[in-house]
Length: 292
Image (cartoon, rainbow, N blue to C red):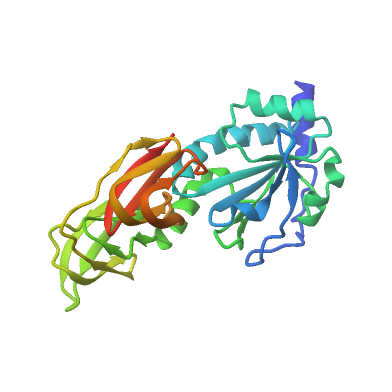
């Protein structure tokens, strides 16, 4: 009991408002970190995702409580592009690794510096108490400092909805939205021809031509195209390769709308993609597949 109380007091031994060397609106400072398996990770390699840089330690009671709450947020928003990068100030690697296992932490991006409070990363970000966190957007800009975990779902929902992507730009059957929102389809004359909510839009019945998707008062343009024969592909659950029924121009999007691969041919190598759901555009014909 005394140990736990000491951990809480140690984590919150600073009652004043800290003056961090970085502030909201700044470009995040890049850094390398040692991973659990002894490799080198890099913050800016996560560009394209919204990332919570979370400074913690196994001996910090509030950090362990925060981990438990953060797991729910991660499981809810990771599919939309939210990632957690946990930087531990543990001086003993064994304690750090054990805490990751004991807390059942699902994210894979973990770093540790056995220098503890003297860690160059902690000094770079002005970390003087634990837990301390910095939320950065897809472009690496700091958008929040020390957000309360309880408020993260609200922050993330607002962020993702205000930055909704619509893809592909040319489609035959389906449009994909990067998150679930209310939308309207507007034709070239300004008339609303379809309205609903969701992440996938069925456009098979639209006439060929230019349209806009209105989401959160923003207009995202696309072109409805047509092809005589719809291509097919297999398998729908792929490990290393997709095979097409005919030669196609293809584009593969991840679940947040970023292009991860494109080309032309009868097949596509997907062995280097991470496990998850992807959307495949074949000559404008859009289907989804699971990378195993």
